[in-house]
Amino acid sequence: MPFVLVVEDDPAIRRAVIRSLGDLGHAVASAPDAMSGLRAAVDEQPDIVVLDLGLPDLDGTQLLRMLRAVSAVPVIVATARDDDTSVVRALDAGADDYVTKPFSAATLDARIRAVLRRSASPGGGDPTLRVGGLVVDPRARTVTLDGEPVELSPREFDLLTYLAAREGQVVSKRELLTEVWRQPYGGADKTVDVHLSWLRRKLGETAQQPRYLQSIRGVGIKLVEPPR
Ligand code: CA
Image (cartoon, rainbow, N blue to C red; front, side):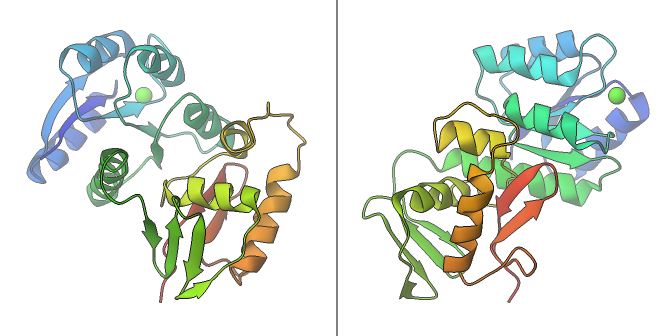
């Protein structure tokens, strides 16, 4: 079972998260502020960190930047803020996923398991990515959807591979532009949107009736297994 570090200043929330994750069989450590959280993340080597963004000493995003300088430990940001900007900033700073408060223990547990599954997969084994009926083979650079080949441009292929490798994880457009296009983010850039709409068409879906490619308004995009 994974060892989870919870960084949360609100004692009631901290206790509730520790108890519910403990009930689910996780080993849990906790820290009430950013600096002790950073120390615990380095010293105690957790498998994953659940990080509150509103902390008394430092903003959670600042902590995340400091942590990323020394550790690749997966981080799920827990935010009470419903503004997209803080979520985008946290994802850009290296968060792997986020949950919005109030969240259920079941939701947090599912996110933890999904993030750990993703972070365990790189390196070794079969690199083929399977999401529902979608199969992406990064070595052969081929894609099939429900067994039928899908013809993609090199950029569309890279975009789909990047998203499929992060199944269920919201990826910001800024990250896509930086990681897939290797371009600085220009704010008003429509490059990602345009390629996403081409990719959607080739996967037989639209923004209005998405299946695999789910837009999260103002935050980014995630690739999911569509309901049957
Ligand atoms: Ca807080």
